[in-house]
Image (cartoon, rainbow, N blue to C red; front, side, top):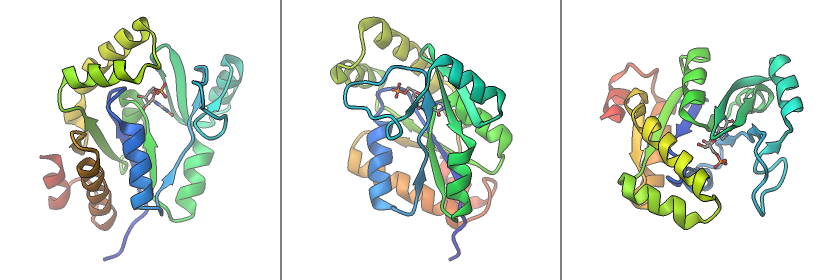
Length: 201
Ligand code: 5GP
């Protein structure tokens, strides 16, 4: 069946394992394009500029906002994060579907600008498990963990607005489910047909 290159948004609370899931997804479906977001937060140890993120200072981020260079951008955990239009357009023009790993506000902005975008929400098995993963990661101080947990609660409330939801209980299983959601939406029409409605359940 013919495949259509589409814009996919993958959101979910901090600590849910989106990053790992999306990189495994990319191994499974190498044709998918991933964009490198821009952010004003400081790099974590091991993160490389232009690979993990484009790390920009506030002035440069603002200049790019004013120049209309962002497909979407949002304040997340006290910093600005955004997707550069140039990154998504380049991949789509190559006929590749694009996966944006962005927060819920960003997901909603993408939907408003591109009603055809497919929004997939990654859920933790429980809030307790999410807290355990977030603390176990050891990259955030206590204030940042608290802020991420508070954001997680409000993000989880919007999960119902997404086209599909995947629980990250077991990594292998979750990647397989995410890949099959992507393939279903690429080979079928918009989010109003039967197959897509099944993905909502
Ligand atoms: P982190 O600081 O842990 O790398 O990312 C924090 C949050 O920012 C995550 O929820 C992630 O999805 C979100 N995020 C990363 N890039 C973007 C982006 O380009 N736009 C938006 N709106 N959110 C982003």
